[in-house]
Length: 92
Image (tube, rainbow, N blue to C red; front, top):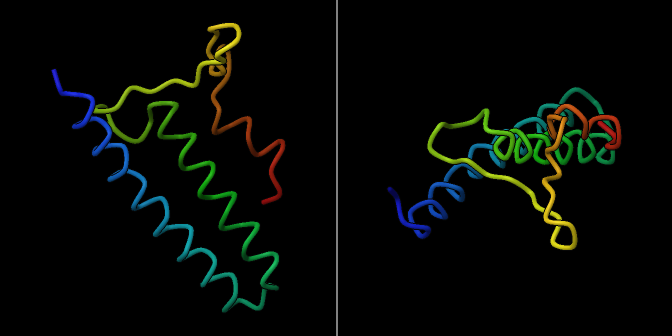
């Protein structure tokens, strides 16, 4: 079993390609003539959805994560895929 420090490092390494993709999307959108505001909304939506995809367990089998409400102890992932649901709330 991996230590928490090893899992933390894996988590942060998984964030690198998410950030890279968000930047590339913003640059591409800007080149297509999108406003800076539109490009930033798309890039941040992509980054947030990427992190939620990681939490949902679709990025790697090495990391199993959850978001727990500290008051109730319940998972925010209960009966939903976070990355699917976030687009209902984010401007993309």
